[in-house]
Image 1 (cartoon, one colour):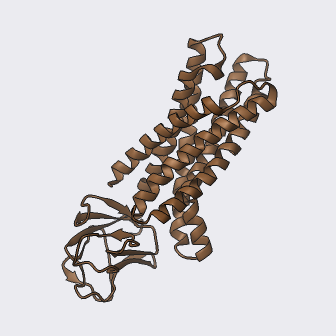
Image 2: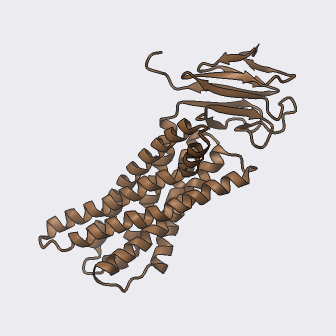
Image 3: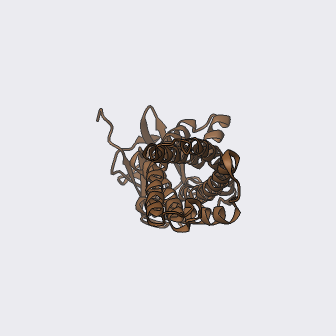
Length: 324
């Protein structure tokens, strides 16, 4: 898919995840508890369910954007790892936010109480957003650390996702807090925890903002990418974040070009060396071409170069460097 569609689906998926998380929270979270334990237990369960569904949805979108669905094993592992971290994210962030919110309710001055309650609420969702961002790239980060392969690319993605998740958590928390405030004014005298509309809108806003910013951060901060001009699924765009990105017909290829008989199962690699990208043909009969020139050894790539393998054409793009 294109980058625009990826960001759109991240925002839409996050919004739906927020709604589903709110629904399960409304049904499953205990509502009869009082005091500190009751407040924190309720917010922790709600936060855990919300973060679980958001991590599930966003990790699936991210996995299918970067990995072919034919590699279902990798997709499942990425999603499972993200859900595991997402559960912790919801519990931890909501526990902190709920504890601070409970303490803020003890403030006697109403205006100050509202301010500190909002700060506690936003702070809790900021932590949740940060950890959901971590969950998206957790599998890649751990794999890179264990295998000592492509760790640099995984760490860069980690930074982008954490930045996006944190900002998304802040913005979502602000919108959700505003929705609760308006709901409290409109439905004054009623228990805010039983007001479905403002709470649901708040959860949808949190999910949408986290999804939007996690997706947007990866695209805005991208360093290199490929666009398929001709071949399998033309128009799709793919980020290049690994030290070696494989091109071929094999299901395990990073850039899969299915259905092109002129492309070998493992045809070529885009490699990152010394801060520059190169195309390396893997001694294929048909060869690999950059701007219609056959590749001999490692050929340096620059923005706008057309890579041709078989009947497929890829356009290489790279973010401008400061010293260019």
